[in-house]
Image 1: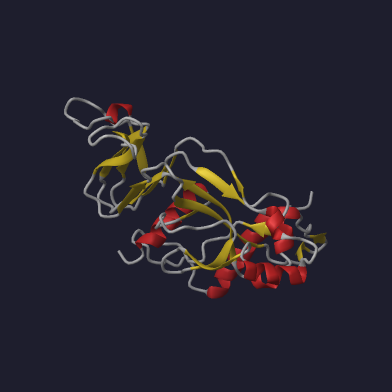
Image 2: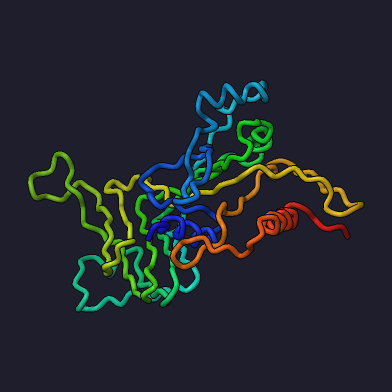
Length: 300
């Protein structure tokens, strides 16, 4: 499947309003900016607002503000996160004598997912995700005034975790069983050979599937090494009047940046673009109407 990653990104975006990372071990950082790759669906990073190069650019337009005083904030770990697209149904994983997997009965995260036949389905699982984000109300309005960010996508938050699993179905109506099981204590540096005391238990994925588009990983030390999900924003488009006598109220604060639409046309089940409109002018008009509806309030 040529556009598997883009199809996965598109399905997760429809479910979460966030952008999925097809390669979670490859880091995505808060403040990254660039363009969305039209084939992979991933962000082609061109810089970061906290890099020295950008701070020199930023100073030209906001000389009285130091971005180092507004560094990203880190939230507390959350509960396990599971997101699935339309046509995916979760079931309890039946644990019996026939399932001889040590520790699976006490696994903190487990389940079985049934995918619909004839359509692609996407699944994203994050164990105890933690969000890192640009401080709200402090930075975005000032960044709007930097021309270098025009037509760029900006990462405003990332969700990192110590273990993840992602899956894109093959339309065959398959089932996928997953469990995050403990491997037992890991030996400490001064333990005798074969001993397990002094260490902490590590988690690893058990799976029951032959799927080729299943990706999973876990950090043996519980580090937040993976970024499976992130939020993108783009500058709000300047607009005049929505109605003859109704000026559009100007944005304020963080509202200078909005959630972007996907930069591709609707995708078919195999990730290929399936245009709804043949006339490009009609497409542009439709997007303009949607943006206006999102960014304005109709008059009373």
